[in-house]
Length: 87
Image (cartoon, rainbow, N blue to C red; front, side, top):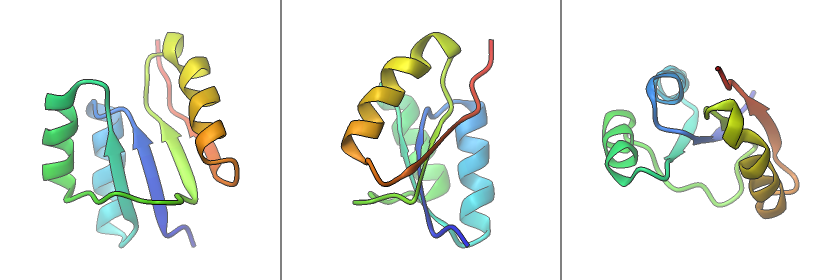
């Protein structure tokens, strides 16, 4: 079972996934370049900071996924990376 997930993207999809994971007892971190969206999502989800997430979920526009994927995989080389990008 997955115990920790870092979600990059605090929009509707990312925050909804974070809420569902948190309800199942998974430790969740939510980050976003928009600090207001990030704070709202963190408050809603009661998210924490995760040092070494098992899974990183990218909930971003498709145009941003490659750049963020490279950055996140460099920071967390042992994490599983997934995306729920949409156009």
